[in-house]
Length: 157
Image (tube, rainbow, N blue to C red; front, side, top):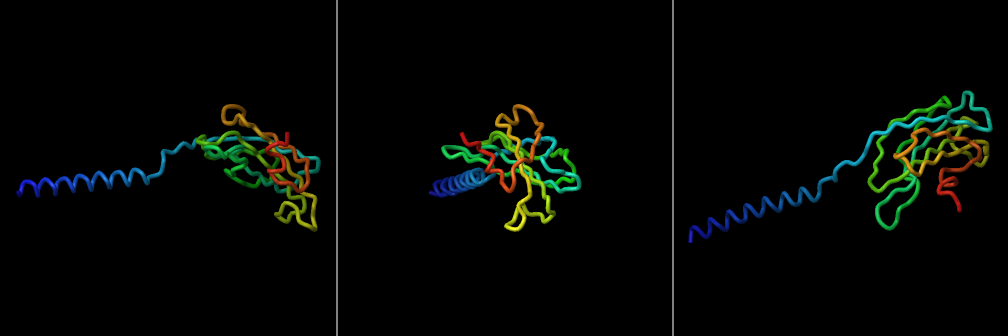
């Protein structure tokens, strides 16, 4: 009888440890799939960029796993005082594809991409749907007033 009690006690201990290991393993974060990437580029505009602040945002072109991928998942945003830029960030290939670099120039210096009173900030994008398998250079031409990245991408067909 004592042997049976001892066996049950050991069985419960082993089962509890196995259950705890399963719970910890199931609730832990998945393995990292992010890679450090560096992109560079040049921004041009139909208006002068001298002394202007440029706002630049980097997006996954498509993001999501399964039946409902969606465009423009933001990775990083930063400001630049010059027309050339270089940025290092982490890119996650898992469920993501392509890269969109969006930029706009703050012509009126208010830090806002257009308001009801001021409609003279220009924007543009550079799209690489094959990123990171191809070019890491992005040239952005600012040609449209008062639009966000979703105005440019995905392109209307």
